[in-house]
Amino acid sequence: MSTVSYAQKKGSAVNSSRRRLNTAESFMSEGTASDTTRRTNYQYILSTLSGALFNSIIIILIGSIGFCYIEKLSVIDSVYFSMVLLTTVGYGDITPITIGGKMFCALYALLAGTLLLYNMSQISMIPLELRQRRTENLILSQFGDSLDDAALRELASGPIVERLNLM
Image (cartoon, rainbow, N blue to C red; front, side):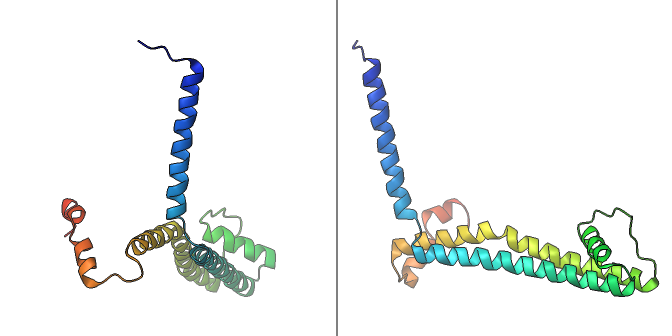
């Protein structure tokens, strides 16, 4: 039985770690997106987030103007009431008093709540969209810029698809 010193074990562990790191780096460099793809992804993220923020601000402004006009609330109170209503906190310290205010509140809560949920769904779809784009880029990079019908049919009916019962 041969004895291995601690330094030899440590050296082989370091070399093994270096090999894994080099393999990971080469894998990452092959799988990383180009600058154009990164820029496109950043643009997608920024446009989605800015669109959701813009929609949310407009929704809150519409509610604030409505409550300010219908219920004769101050600007601060109307913004506060719009935020409390849309976040479904409902403290109850400010409530609509007039019939018009109650009608506006009911319609506003339904419509604005739906639009805010839509904004949240768009934001939550960002990681899924980026993953889909990354997968598409990896597949297209394997087949080049052209993927003919025969190759696509072969991919769609391959052994993995059959094994997963996706056909």
